[in-house]
Image 1 (cartoon, rainbow, N blue to C red):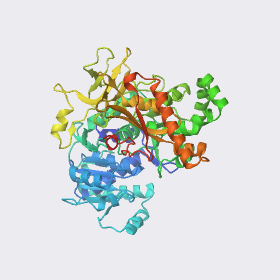
Image 2 (tube, rainbow, N blue to C red):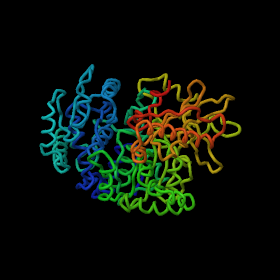
Image 3 (spheres, rainbow, N blue to C red):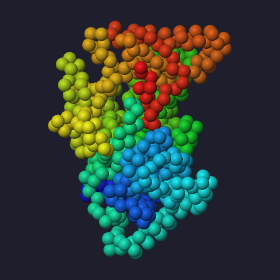
Length: 578
């Protein structure tokens, strides 16, 4: 396998089409896959269509769609021709979608039928060209919903029809304008320019928990170097099957769940419906994935809803669980692997901190989890470790080519803000020079905003977000994420946040009401609420018995509805903290 000639997305796809032409590349779970050669052909076809509609190198094209094989075709078509992709998370509110389209000044939007209404009502200075994701057909802003459905059913829904259209468009484009340039080769269009690794590939708008969405500018070199460096942590190659369950608009899934496997000849399977338990189980049985990417929330829900109740459903089982937890976890781990299809060898976890008791289960269960740490601004991975080297509660060691250091470490704990340098670090926040300046030191280190420390083996441990740290009565640092992790150990808790109010620590807890109803549903309403208050107080007492006096929670309140979250499932803390 020869190395990349240059760190560009153009080079990634050209190389893979050459190395793995007949290997399966993309498909819906259970569907007929397109090969790498067909993938490159489809990309060429879409590039021809984009150029026919006036899209050139340097122009911006937004992608607003659920994760599908066509998403990857669109992304590579845009970036490999020197244009700039602007992925938009499907769960963004229409107002946020309108803002991103205006702020990024996109020339076109590739949008799925389901999300079309999030685009059509926006007020734009200049109307972008719209293409329907399912067909890549141009559509009008005022297109009737029924017409969109007809377009979707017009014979282009399946991959084979899409490829026929792509080949036709490619041939016409070659004959008319680029015959000498790409005739007889797999080379991708670049709209008259050679794509450089220093060229901007994507502007990704964050789903931050502060209420502000910033456009992170990433080059081809940022993204591709990050995907390439992951080989030092996990190996992915031909024969591997990925089941994608996260939004491709998120950097984590795009870099590690799309570009990494495409770079190495793996087969990516997508779900044509949201990854609920009902949809996910048959998909895993069908695909039998060898590699999956997930956020902690997925495995935490599985642990709390399907594993822990079976191990602790009675007094006798709870007693046995305390005495023989590692052995019981090992048995449960074997069953969990079967649930995932029986072939899983790498289960990557990232995007947020994992609950300590869930990671302990994965470790004792011999479940092949890998773990990583990073940010959208770093393309995203900064540190990580593969299944054979995971260390409890650590996010691993720094990625190849990345430099990490602790700024102004505490003399006793060694903790401080994590700073990063390397080829994966973003160029800037789009149109925000002052904010950009604020996140870089004078000598070029990127401020992650995360607090952490290294152990003697250079394994990184994250303590929490710098902005979330609470200063105790005598200047002590209190990390709300650690207290939240302790609260989450209760089987009654689904979600929680800890914050300071009037110089007191408050915990707001969202209980598992279905579990409460199952256990105490026969009680009168007033008695039931008394039981809930008692549960909350027991949770508070349990946590307080484990922490120093300055970290004790003084008050617990129930959050009756699920917390409002970002599209990447992080709680919007600012909505709940006065």
